[in-house]
Length: 422
Picture 1: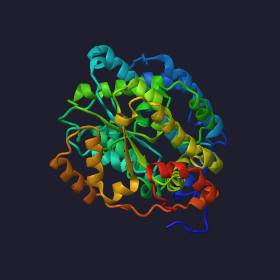
Picture 2: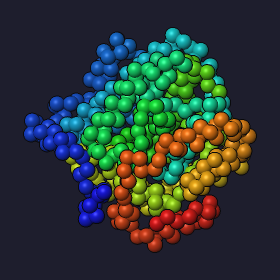
Picture 3: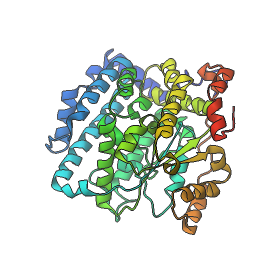
Picture 4: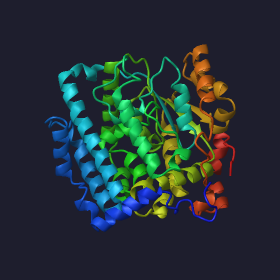
């Protein structure tokens, strides 16, 4: 349990060896940029070499956000030697994936003919139950969620024979093992694993128009660019990846999720006009407290210091309200909102998961089978809450006025009958 005297967002919760290695990197060379390079041309060239000489990265609309991201990483992120190494590895992974995907689509153009019909998207405030809802619906044998290892190593697409035994699964798990070694408390905040469903930000990251880069490190400049960027290319690439995954396995319908869809609903619905949207609802004050703690842990994994004010700006008070308002505005304006949106309260999901999911299925004319119910019950039995320890966080760490924040979200809570938890 965290010391109550230590500010949770400010606390350096890295392991001892991670702090030591970060300090050693600074000692070796005060400017670690020369040790681990994050330069566009060099990264593109390195990805080409790693892919065996492939040079086609697909549509060029990734290049501007890629350049903006690199600039922001250098200017804003305060990356340690470990942080630069992690970021470089992730960027090269995305670039190499793009090369492989472009090559595969050229060799198998029929991939673009794959139909993605009536996908289910789960959206909602961060830490509002989107993850557990995603995992429970994914127990339905008639639906498919992209798995975390697929998001990290998508090409070539998986096959039925190796879907749960592909060597890329172990490679993805080793990444999470490293994260836990760097920040042990991280595993109390969210369960990680190669065979768990992945968020859509892992797919849109390949377009370099994604909140994936905001959640892992401090990139204020990139965040400012993303806030006004055209997100159509991100969802076009998202569809391409689903089409590629389908080409390897028979898929009837997708179940997908990401809180970041809240601010991108017009682009999502333009790409997927027949999408079914499930919105989760939880006390926004509880969501912002938990999210702040999680983002601080992510930042400490890579940075020499953490800008708590930046976290507050995006995920407390006005920042959290803006995300919610964008989703509700898009929802209120949508002509088919009554048939394309369903609601799930976090409290209901925790108390009555089967009944809550059955209502979602009824809303969208899906069959909720006995097999699905049994698989949900077995999944929950094997997944107790606080499995790896209790995640400690306090709303006071965000330095917000509780009465002011409660008033800010009162209309939202009343509209969807969301109970207060704080």
